Image (cartoon, rainbow, N blue to C red; front, side):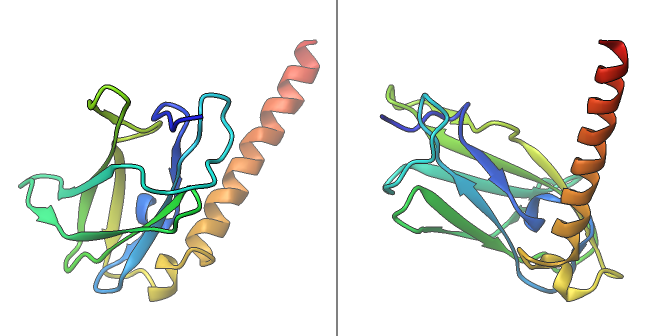
Length: 146
């Protein structure tokens, strides 16, 4: 089955707050099909555009096709700012459409440690922990309501 933008997703420190200025950061695009299954091959046409919020200057990025349905995107910000990350996919009709959640807003801070930019760094741990807490609260409140 072909990749679908509305089922595909992106994750990683390059899409979060507290990105460290002056150090490379990254995020992963995971291509998914109509059934929400991870694709197992590459060669999809994704485009990533990262711009500084305020002056819309473009920040260069590199996109690597891992040929397994996932794509690694790396970029580096030189100064404190907020950035907009747009991830587009070329659909079957040749139209560029946003993947689920795009555009993203990330914040780059000079005070952040370099390891905040790693896929296994503290920014990801903090984000996942926060998500689990929200899920736990939702389950507790829903159970009470039932």
